[in-house]
Length: 353
Image (cartoon, rainbow, N blue to C red; front, side, top):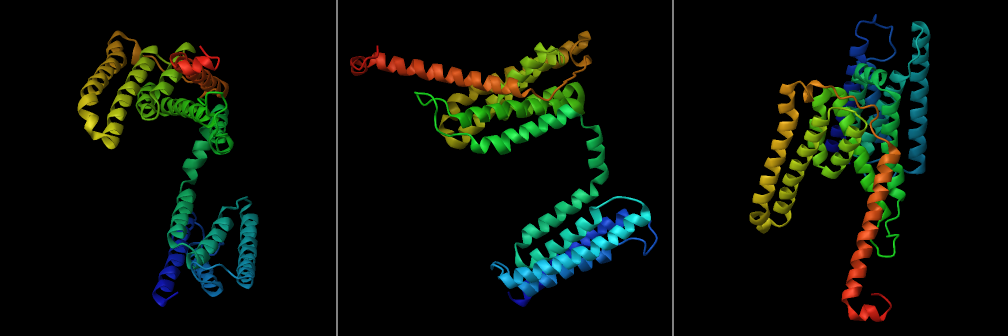
């Protein structure tokens, strides 16, 4: 590692410490000098300390030796013990319980060391992300205070469906005709749940008009999912039927435009054939959406009625519909296979037809 690169990395380690220390120092800016464990100076020095130790034990892009790893671990342990002991004394003096400052200081030390031996961009991004999280304390606490158990449960279920169940789903077809892929069916369930969750969030924060926004955004992913979710909401009397109808119309309009964009990217020569028809269909769908969303408002219905979604989505409903689509896919593939065999004389000799 040349001198210029080493200076740049040390400057990054110092910058990470200054950035995180600025947030911590601003948070305790009204405290009496000397009454707080760590401020902007302590965090800046912590970043430099980690950078100096990182420069001693290794070079960027090279694996650490056993001795270097031990030195780095011992150095971090000593630093963590010192900062934790001071923060413990501070908490006792203030009669509070908080581990944010010592953990932030330890992270500053680690990122300072990583800036010298690892990827500079990753170290910088991690420092900025950590500072943003520290600065958003009030907003995060307020959001946690307002969130309901059904919202938290649905979010966790959606994450589990995506991050836990999806990677282990089989990718090989399970039906005799090769038409049903469990992974693809599960992706359909995830899309349905995501669109339903998006609609819930939009209505929660934007009111009844959030239904229209959810329909437009959902149309970018799957207009079918928007249609299913809107039909389920209408059957459960969750929201004005006119708005839910307008949401489906907007999703359909976006779907037509999405097809035009895909064709333009993959086969521009076909635009002249499909663009006029799809553009007219999209315009007509927008007209229906405007009619149901705003014209009924003049009669005292529609927008005047508030939307109230009780749950973001139901796991069994989205999984059940995904399974229903899988059955439809099997039957469709089966019918096509039987038709092909009936039209082929050789297939009839084998027992089909």
